[in-house]
Image 1: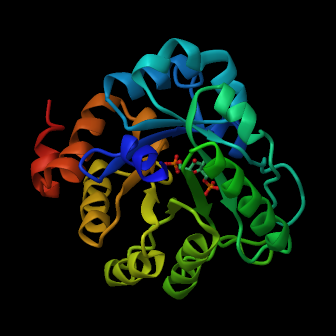
Image 2 (image 1 turned 135 degrees about the vertical axis):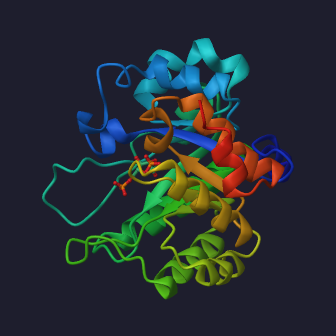
Image 3 (image 1 turned 30 degrees about the vertical axis):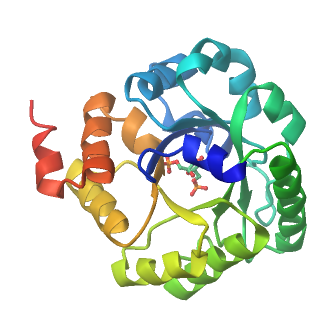
Length: 263
Ligand code: FBP
């Protein structure tokens, strides 16, 4: 059952998800008057034929219905702002039952390993994974080693540990940042075992670096990307989407993908 549901989120065992939860995670600073409108981003997801759209419950409740027939939904069931002056902790904000009601194909949850709240998040995630699997929904764990003492930890051994934690906890996918260590990422995918690895997009970068990164992570064994700002902040989001997809799904080289971006 779960494997079938996982496969529904894949194209030839690869995946490209679009994320729009940055309004909660970062605030409006990531957006312009055009991109702040969820319909703008949802439209990119449909036209770009993304494997799924990642939303928090509020945007899903108010905007998703219209796109339901064409776009699988992943509901992010926990989250946090950058406003709280505490060690990173993203509590559960949406029940699995409610995500199911919204039409979710999967649920996502961020675990900040190294935070003093890590034990709570491990426990919450495990319960959510159990419940989601009971409903037949795959679970995606955002594995972000981070604490107030340490902004982010991108050390390969820590990311490998995080990947293994994802497997041990029952995540179907893990999502993490790429630290530009290609050999390291091969080890990280091995540590993740049968849990599929997705890479986050990060802040907007130039298309050349982005295409190289997509190529490198796919070569290292990633299943795909869950990306946001690099797509919907782009001047031509559908062109960027097509270029990324050519690498993920058609095994194109970065130079070939770049040619798709020329006017
Ligand atoms: P981006 O591609 O825009 O980085 O989005 C991916 C993502 O995981 C989002 O789901 C989330 O809002 C954001 O990154 C969290 O980023 P961070 O916590 O590093 O600021």
